Image 1 (cartoon, chains in turn green, cyan):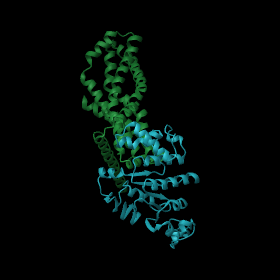
Image 2 (cartoon, helix red, strand yellow):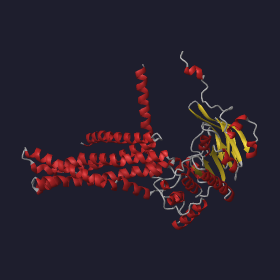
Image 3 (cartoon, rainbow over the protein chains, first blue to last red):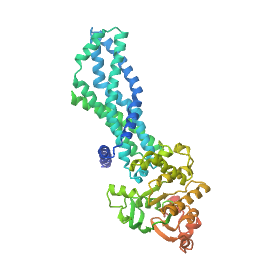
Length: 255
Length: 261
């Protein structure tokens, strides 16, 4: 009896949080389309979530592509199919590794920072201060972040794809001597629009997921230093897990 | 200006504000005094509409803040200024941008005029020349004054001060007290100050309200409060540890709690 009650309480509690976070996201997106539009804030957030993640995405993409190049070459050469290296690298990156790894890197870099920033704003009374200035904190703080996530992630993912394929090319063609025409030519014929569309769709969802969870965790953090640090850790863990789970769901729907 | 009617606020089983009735006169400095946990910050949150009461009304210029929609509430807030206990400056903006913030958000005033307004407000709080500094580079007293400059930048009709002098040295306390009086007299701004600082309160107040665990136990001018015969008021203004206001919070018997069965 006791166990059932505890389980029930736990489930209700989680459902309540889920509901609250849903309303939170809905309000933030709704507010983004209510004037006044804060273009400057949006550009600033895109700079933070997007531009500043370029280097980390570049390095991740380059090495992922290079590793795929080596691994792919040795696996494929066992069947004498080195020529398919380009297709293998490109498909794995465009469909899966690009959106997922890119999102995970942005979670670690920007997601954690968003939670910490919002949490500290909460500790220092900046939300009531905004309220007292007749400014909706959700609209001012959260809406631009969510929009920036949705805009930045597909762009970063496209960049990741490009660098990743170049990394595979570097190792496959320049280092291991795969035919250049085969690497690029087969890739162009084998990749369909659906592959690219699927990858971009995933990155859109991940962009939303990262900024949504990070902002919500910051907003609901306990207003103490310990509370904010806990919220930041939780945000990164929860976002990373959600990305992997949502990735599976989206893949199964898309294929 | 502000009229409170039958205001009740509860957190769980604890009644923080117990059927309060009071009013805040236009152009006067009213100080809400009370010890920790007396409900004064909670009352301030109700007065500004930051929190909704369980029952009762708060009328600001004749409009009930507790029932109005968000848009109307925001319209009312544009006539209010607030100085937070921790100043609540935006730590990613410099002093100039902090003060200019409400102007940039709510008006279409040109940049050069914003600059003039910000300079004037900084001069009023005696901090001209700090425009380019970040909030973290200022002392506690100075951030309070910047917070005050930001609170008055939209020329509000009323300013709320949440513990304006807590954590400040005596001179900064005096400066803030003088600023509150100056703003009140020169700009005819109504002021509501939440404080537990008796000395500065007696210096700046026109009216005083004393809260005690959610009830108003005294209300009147400084003289009336000083001459009050109420034992709780006497204990509070004299800062006596012994008296009708208990030192311990629980009514459980101490001996019962420490002795073994």
